[in-house]
Amino acid sequence: MRNIFILGASGHGKSILDLVKLEKRYHLIGFIDSIKTVGSDYCGYPILGREADLDGLMQNYQVKDFMIAIGDNYQRFAVAERIQKAHPSLQLVTSIHPSAVISSDVTIGAGSVIMPHVTVVSGCSIGKGCILNTKSSLDHDSVMGDWSSLAPGVTTGGNVKIGIRSSIGLGGNIIEKVEIGQDTVIGAGSLVLKNIGDRLLAYGSPCKAVRDRLIDEKYI
View 1 (cartoon, rainbow, N blue to C red):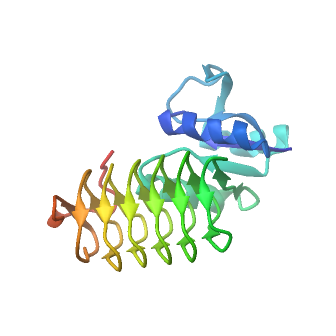
View 2 (spheres, rainbow, N blue to C red; view 1 turned 135 degrees about the horizontal axis):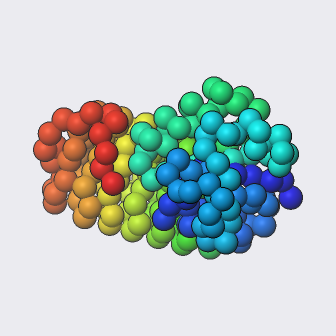
View 3 (cartoon, one colour; view 1 turned 45 degrees about the vertical axis):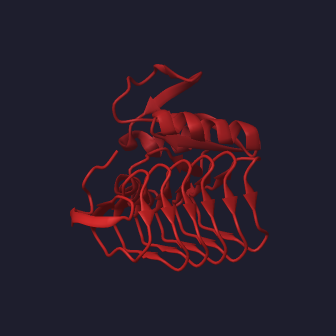
């Protein structure tokens, strides 16, 4: 098994830890975290240090792979960009829960995580660093841009496009052929019947744009 670090000792970190254990492809050395006390324990694994400590930790533990446990799409993107620029040999890895149902022709980018009971149907493309949360469903020929996410229970029709870093909230539904722009957040329980543009907060049934949003604006 190859050794890995998880960046982010968070609730999402617990979920990713579960994937790592079930897949049995990687050996987790510990967590890198900017807040928790170095040397403390998280879910049975040590907090090894901060981002600034990565050079020494990579060498000491012979680590070339990592996963990012940050639920916020922009923050996950920004951390990955910063780390891979500073440590080009450190590679993002993908993890998929064994209960997920994924068609054989689906493409999945580096660093994406697919949680329990997710369904991804034929012809879909999932970008780099995406999150497909528990019981979400991406129907045929749909596209998730890099660093985008589906919250638990999200369902899409076929030929849906979700833009870079966009987030679909808990239990949202998107009908077929709808496009969601970049850096847009769709609120929980929304029914999306028509295209939603870039950098918007939108919600409701039917879903409507409520206001503009900054790309780094926190939403979770």
